[in-house]
Each structure stands twice: as C-alpha cells, then as structure tokens.
Image (cartoon, rainbow, N blue to C red):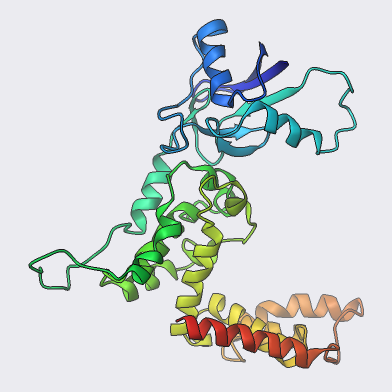
Length: 335
C-alpha cells in the first residue's frame, strides 16, 4: 500500500516546513521502519532519535497525526484505521492515506524530529527522584521490602521517560513553572516507597503553588498517550490525597478548593456557588482581599439577574452523600 508521509521539518530557531515522502509499505511496518526507509532511501538529512526499536528506551517519541507516541510501537495499519474513524469532510474516498509526523511539543526543536529535552530532565530532577535513606543508620544489608510494599511501585516503575506525557501536557504549555506529569508520576513512586525517609518534606514541595500537583489541569492527555500505562494523572491524584489527608482547609486555596467542593456536594448534591466563593476564595471570611476580589463578579451577576439568592438541594442528595462517604471509607481502609 502507498502512504504519503508528511514530516514537519525544522532547523533550530527557524520556521517549520512540511516535506512529503511517498512510500510503498506493509500494514505491519512501524512508523520507525518508515522513517528509516525515508532516511536511507530518499533523504539522508532527516533527523530523528531511535535506539532499541522495541518500546523500551523511549527515544523515538514524536507526534504521529497529532498525538505523542512511540514510532517503534505504532504501525501503519493501525494508524490508518485510527484515522479512518475520525470524520474529515475534505478527505477524498480514494486518496492516498497520509500520516503526519511532527516533533514532540513543549520542548524546543533542535532539528526536524529531535527536540531539546533539557527542561524535561531538569523538572524530573526538581522532584528529587531517588530514595533518601539519609535518616537511617547504614544497615549491614540492603533495605528490604515486602512483596506488598514493592507492588506499590510497579506502575510508576514502568515509566521509560519517553516524554510523550510532557509533550501533551496542557498545564506545562501555559505554566512554565509546572514540573510536568512525568516528574510527578516519579514523585509518587518516592512517596509510596517504604524505604524513603523524606515523605513529609516531599509532600510539602509537591504542594507548593502551581509548580507541583495543583498545577495539573486534569485534562487526561498524559494518561491517554502514555505507552506504558503509567497513568501520570492517577499518580498526581494519589499525591493530592496524601496532601489533603495531612492539611486543614485553611492551609491554602488549592486545598480548600478540593475540600470545600466535596463538603458542599455532600451537603446539597451539587455546589452552592455562594458558599463556594466565600469559603474557597474568602477563606470563610478570613481573607478580606479574597472577598474583595469577588465583589466585581458578584456585582455583574446581580446586575444581570444571575446571582443565586437561594439554594435548593438536588434530588438524590442522600444517595450522592452515601456514595462519597463509601469512597472515602474505601480510601481510608486502603491507607
């Protein structure tokens, strides 16, 4: 079958251009196989990273038809089938299938599909991604774990540092201080590790502003593109739960946001917006600056007749409350 590959090519500090390459391929050929053929047979100047060719090293991560993935894992047949399910009014019935290849996002391009991953590694280092046993006396033998303790590390231990989640992270795109889903997934591995002695310090660091867990927008893109099912968002949520279990609502606005939302839904089945603003932004009338910041919005809502003067609980409030309490009890039992 013939496939038209559109490769986004770019020199450092220059505008990207699209180069097209026509290949005769088999459905089972991987995208990396095709890129190798383009380089060997048509254009030796094409630059991209590769190494193991077996979904182990993560070197060949790139954007394939708009989503970050491993070129050695995705094949032509499955990619064409995926594209066929996406409506495209301008696509002709008998047109040659096209596959677009682009560099990873959220990182500057060095050349073609090769990006500078400096920020990726620096943000990983920022979460101190290694076990600290400094507080312990050096033992005569290694620090041992039970099989149950070790099993808590399995999922995050599968991360191959490919950068796919970092590439797709919306929070990282708008907030350069956010460390990224890869770093926080690794951070949870340290929090969950029974050998580590700095859990409290770690949680304080991960709770700081929007560079840690509260900077995540929960868009789910990191989970969707992870080739190893690490589920970074799930690990970020686990860190949040550890922080919330240790902090009172007045500790920060981020913590109040989560705690107040749950309390109001338990009380009324949905959120009483009046109470939400006062309790989260105004810190239960303790934060006068926060309360004053709500005044312009409140006045606009009153002027347009959109300010809720009363609140009625939703139908099934008791059922909602029971569900939340059951989940909380289940989480507490696991801890």
